[in-house]
Image (tube, rainbow, N blue to C red; front, side, top):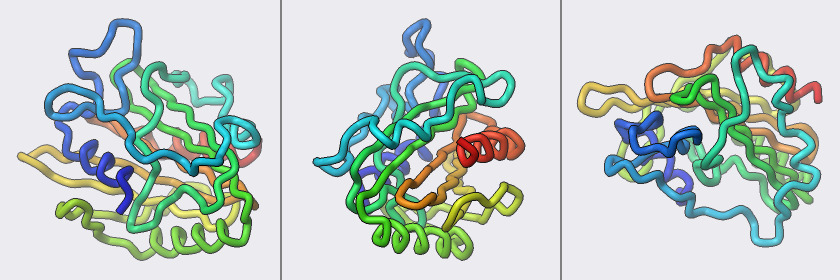
Length: 217
């Protein structure tokens, strides 16, 4: 399990996942808050030789193409290297990466887009084929001793290669924390979308609009 997965667990278990009262005025809440109200800092870094921006930035969804009512979010942009169902969604031999967070409101819901480009398309294809299989079959995933319930999302447009989408949730003290993960490959490029919110998630229609726009860039 990557340290990014540990961050995911913190996010899922945080009762104040976003919209915390301690957020700075004019800045959207960070992707998550720990039970103490302090946003967790991503502790897993992309591959050392990878470049921030570059070719990966070309696939970041332009703000003008977001669904109606959505915009670029400010503040912290990432939850760390994405991992779900035992598959690390950052491809091997990473050459460039870019991240952008979208929001429908100050308190969410939110979507984080990761764009990764690999210098080894074959290895990337192998990694993402494992993701597509996991997304179709994974029903639970245990991380840091906590079991998440996972289900396949079947009503989103399947784009690119090795497409997969899942919904993950965990209940704590009667409160359900949930996330949607969508990822696919386009040659050497991998796109990952992580949807989350304090109460509601983006609708599947909103996610579908983002997916279609990114895939058609």
